[in-house]
Length: 271
Ligand SMILES: NC(=O)c1ccc[n+]([C@@H]2O[C@H](COP(=O)([O-])OP(=O)(O)OC[C@H]3O[C@@H](n4cnc5c(N)ncnc54)[C@H](OP(=O)(O)O)[C@@H]3O)[C@@H](O)[C@H]2O)c1
Image (cartoon, rainbow, N blue to C red; front, side, top):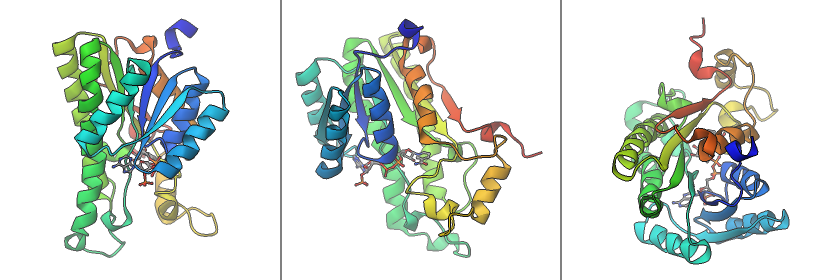
């Protein structure tokens, strides 16, 4: 069982590791014996994350990098290779939404803040594509590796009021399938590319949309719960098993899938 699902000894690059989801997965990975290269855009949260991972007894390094700059990513790849000589796993976690890219209840679409639309589509889509290029190049040379991207329920049916995030996540699903095929056809069956599609988890980026200041559910979150057969939000720790599976030997014939972790949201018509 351990041999099938175990990921001990592998080297993983985790983008956005200073954030909520990236931090959670980084903690889980070091607990599984993975050597973690934590990548984030700011030094301070990165230092705190690495200190936390090392305090847990994990083998971890932190490298500041920008997922939107190829040169920065190449430098990160060089540093990881210099340290460990291999990159087995890439988790593309950096991403998220911005308030200006979300329409207000009564706000017309033509008033969407273009600057924030561009930031959100760029970070979520290219911020996954560029690391796949930089670290995927090493995996191609090794003929081995597992990439896991983060799509969303918004990729299946766009969420009202959040067009930029939705279109970028739909792009991630599409790109995940494209890259899975590209890697397998050109480099064989050792490189796999998959994504998870989280359902609704309360995080810093969506807390104000899903919870009222007194902690009660907003009208929007009541709609989410109504369409979630399990009748609750997810806990981000519930993503760990899906990510680990996709990185493990147990998934060695699995590539190009988008795995929903959503309490049944994507399966439910609501009727
Ligand atoms: N939290 C949820 O409930 C939830 C649910 C479904 C899906 N997701 C997805 O999970 C992913 C992570 O979400 P999260 O809640 O963990 O977000 P988060 O806490 O904001 O973490 C994202 C991290 O990425 C960093 N980052 C931003 N731009 C970057 C860049 N150009 N290069 C490198 N790092 C950069 C952020 O730094 P700054 O803080 O400086 O921006 C932050 O540390 C996103 O794709 C999100 O859509 C989250």
